[in-house]
Image (cartoon, rainbow, N blue to C red):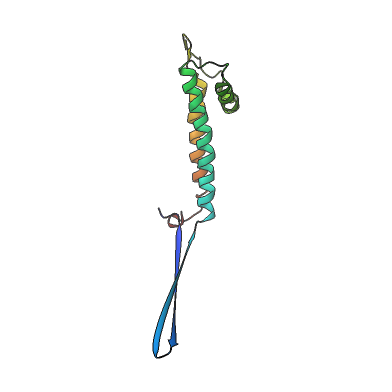
Length: 131
């Protein structure tokens, strides 16, 4: 899949300098990325950030991280917004201080599918060779 389109323009000029004929060549290369590819990259980036936050949340809970820590509180606060719609779907087992939050795992899968779906939806009407 070729995402970037490259255009190369070559200009040749001939000059007479004294008794010598001088040939000069200048090359200009431009690269253009289609707007739909940029939109896909933005969707993948945003989806990737959300999924990464949820993965860190899941890992911290599995390892029984101290919720009094500023970093842990920060991660739980931000990722909680994305995990909240999935709370209560399944039971959440606890093993000592470790806590397996199945709602976060479900959220990761759903956001992954949404990210891929939205990115592919942007290219539905495009010919295959354009994207």
